[in-house]
Image (tube, rainbow, N blue to C red; front, side, top):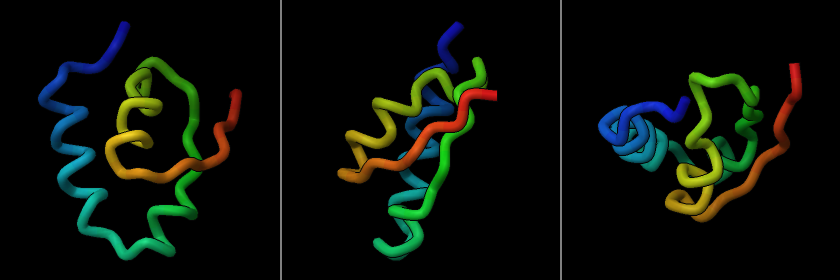
Length: 53
């Protein structure tokens, strides 16, 4: 189940305010709450490791 678009938009908006070095340090946990992480990474023009827990 993907998170609502409004949640993804809010994450992009808020995380976009972070300095570049902090955005590059984000590690994603691939749970259902972050099912939109790939879209967020693309919007922020960054990539980060994903943790399968």
